[in-house]
Image 1 (cartoon, rainbow, N blue to C red):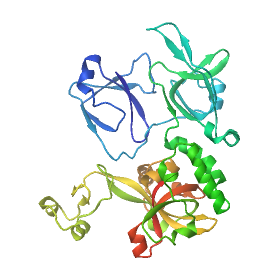
Image 2: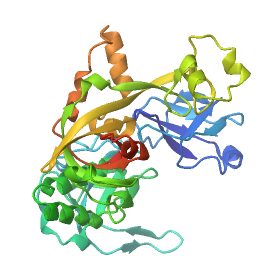
Image 3: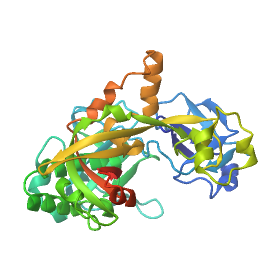
Image 4: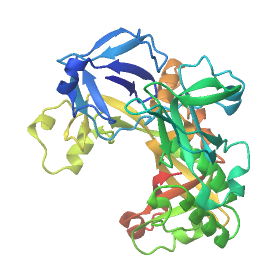
Length: 386
């Protein structure tokens, strides 16, 4: 059994389980987030390589597979190739290619051979959404978004095409995928300006894509000036442009590597928790505690927490964005910035990378909480953005 593993930063490596060990790991191996331990690493001499890596992971009988929750890393690890590279044959030597687009034409399903050696083939054309107006000219019900991962660039009948590879190719049709949503977002938000009725129409038009219900049918749409008039706890969707990063509120927090929740000092923990375990009481005063794990945190990571001022045609307001949403826009992790600052011996200045948030037009799903209402507090937490 062949597998592909991806880490939180998107790096990939192939893995393998020998046939006699497959029953040992049956049920443990699926498309999920896991921690592997007690495995081997050998040279990757497979005939059908999928990723560019000289080594591969080999499973032993003693290999441990432990599921992990609260994954904050890259989900699919797409590495999209430009259409021009493919059409000009520049991707022919690549082990695999990833492409995304909207289906412009689809042929019939063709059959070759006879059972049990029968094979099937279907040919379709996809259109690049970034460089043309195809999507605005096609009726909404006809849109089909496709992503091909680990395809193979080949020459067929004088044309360069993307075909399925022997084992690893997979295809997503109208899936909820962050990288693809960025393509959709660039088109949807492109028309999000103007009057209230226009904004409502454009947000509703997102139903042509399988976007999450939070942003579509179940989402309550609000303009900025309407948020302060909300009188009960609720979530709503606001389309606005980030105008300022409010640097005085910082840009990160230290998080537990196990659960990714904020860690606090022992003294702060003792002030806020009634039932404190003996283990925590006996910890040194300088220790950090994870409130969720209720234990000392000896392994921490850096996560984004950025306060921004956003604006639409009706006014401006402050939102707080957390790690996944900031990372989605910047394309890098908070730990990457932290490492750069350490190497440059510059941990005090505000990172220049975060200024890339400015002038981004985003659909925010925000939370109007009990705290906001009771304290007349007009800084709102972003649950998710698009």
